[in-house]
Amino acid sequence: SQQGEEDPQALSIQEGENATMNCSYKTSINNLQWYRQNSGRGLVHLILIRSNEREKHSGRLRVTLDTSKKSSSLLITASRAADTASYFCATDANSGGSNYKLTFGKGTLLTVNP
Amino acid sequence: NAGVTQTPKFQVLKTGQSMTLQCAQDMNHEYMSWYRQDPGMGLRLIHYSVGAGITDQGEVPNGYNVSRSTTEDFPLRLLSAAPSQTSVYFCASRTRRNTEAFFGQGTRLTVV
Image 1 (spheres, rainbow over the protein chains, first blue to last red):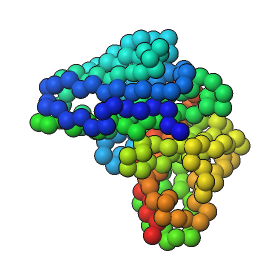
Image 2 (image 1 turned 90 degrees about the horizontal axis):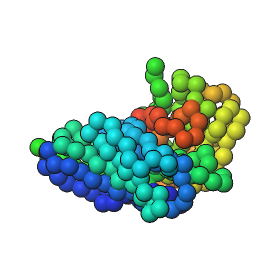
Image 3 (image 1 turned 60 degrees about the vertical axis):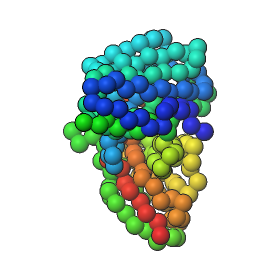
Image 4 (image 1 turned 90 degrees about the vertical axis):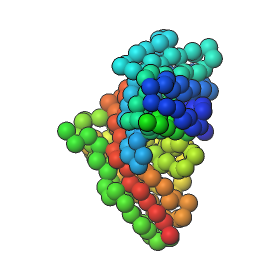
């Protein structure tokens, strides 16, 4: 079964606003990653946060990780119309036969209106 | 670098036909995976490989075969296509676990 679950499923905001997406997962992880997918295209890696990190920044992206709650959030600040895409979290599990699998959630569809 | 290359981009099959989706990467990555993406289901892992000669099943392996004879190539075979296999298929590669994955542009498959 899928490891990550994003929330909300869809988010619509105005340009310039901040967008926050959440991800919850079930098992112990080594890291959590966020990916972006423009309509009809392949996924592109955005940021990776390791299990011993609590917060990470990359440009307008801020990711937090709370391993006690098994959750992560992705914040996109000062959003632009070009940020319109689907965003997925993915996890590398920490144990057993899942060690080699990168498991994805169902994604959040972000629409940024001009 | 071309990265991860998938062919074909689009394919229509009749029920019962077989075909091979090709995936090649030029980054010397050990790990390669196949995912399918269906509306509302996100990406689900079909098969993966951690090196040449080593493959294993993912979450939804039924109806698909894989082999990994070289580091560069990881083809996905549909043995007898069914309408339930209508989906977008993505190949991904990465150097090892706990690193970022690189994706191909996808193959959109329709089985009629």
